[in-house]
Image 1 (cartoon, rainbow, N blue to C red):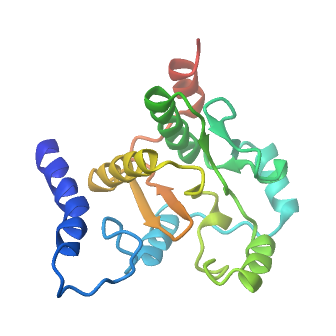
Image 2: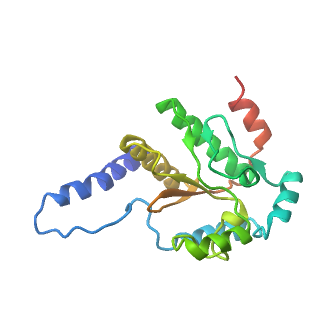
Length: 210
């Protein structure tokens, strides 16, 4: 099964290069065919509904949820989160666990931290963002206010690192671990909470202790 997935990925990556050699093929600007955007927002919203999660309305509610442990702080070891305001460096526990695993894998291969540009956004923040950033999802459609999504900026990646992320995230989508939307400037990642819930504290003790 894994071999078939790898072969399919290689075919997807090589197809544009092969097509470019033919003079009569029109060039079409696209982000990546590995992560189709059609229906992506609907799938993300369905995941939030499946878990019975509501969108966080404002900073006050966000602060209360962090105090109650419903949101946990982003990892600061292998993930670079300094571009995010401190009070927005939080996500749901299973989302943080997936991000931490991804950052650990990335560091193992590149000996570099993985940059994260966005995590939880209350509705008030998402509304302000949508006014000037037309690429941002509408507040009632985005799952950033739910705390189950994070963004990985592309401008921090080399070509090799970008292909590595595409492969890793594509494989995780095929195995039902994440929903991914590759936007023009970032990878938007929504981890899928498994039936056996993540125990983040135990996961961290096992995987992140020296």
